[in-house]
Image (tube, rainbow, N blue to C red):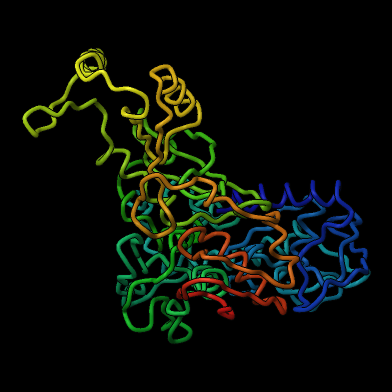
Length: 455
């Protein structure tokens, strides 16, 4: 979304100001170019690494350039033409996302020519758009809405005699709802699926007015990161099926927290209405999860509402009956007096998502009763929850997360990163695509998104 793009640009500018070694992404596919060039953006001179995109120079200068197809974490496409800017001595407006900076460039992002060009692009995009904002779940956080208000005209000149273009909705799985009439062909989802997630089944067919986005063989999107295309989509073409028609963004309050469903510690934002969790979204953190989260993190919140035990249960006559906490504690006390267990004859079992403070309290209670018998039910990758697993098995990692991108070789020992840490797996794939990274595996083979040698 545009708000995230602006926030990302601000954070990147702050990093560039405080870290001399930080640099913008270049057009070069190999090593970074150390030289810098000076360009003038809206009368302000800025220095930026040679090979950077012009839109990145505009961001560094503090000029906001609208975009739909451009995304800092994806390959350049240049589809939407919304980022057009005026460059001195250029014969026409230039797409700033696909144009590398050159020494001495003079750029105007707020000139009448740039405004007119963007207004024309918006007019073309809205010509076939269904304009169904009142029933679209993207309403209130839609880039097309925001930018049409900021850069669009108050009327359109294009009218199709046969009506607006209609596209059949695609079924790409149980988690993503499609409304392809709204698609503006930015191809963000395609580039994410192919480059980041390693799911080549999502792509585009046809060209021009016949272009459609979907899976080639009408199959589900087979990736653990599929939900990220919902965040990437700048319009309401790809939406969350579980969240559909449940809330509007202005009804929700946000809580920033950390994901506890894997050992990566992804930064997330929990959106709730009242006491009910409605959705989970990623937060920006380049050192941990960049801006991706896996589907387990995104969609497991449904279990908080439909499967979570909200009241204690007592087994009587082989049936679980609801009870209050006071009744449960009295029952436990009476059973303890009746059975009089000694030492480790009494056992405490904790769930896998219990916070540390509760675990410490449980251990203290067990020790008070003379027992050291405390076990933890812990999920191990894609396997079912196992009883008594050493929790250290989920965080044995001898490098920084960002160190994956600097490594020449990675050794995986008895693990399946695609299922156990999907976001980390995406970082490994990114490094494998951009460098000569060698990956070795000790353990069982798994369907990987990168090549590896089983040792």
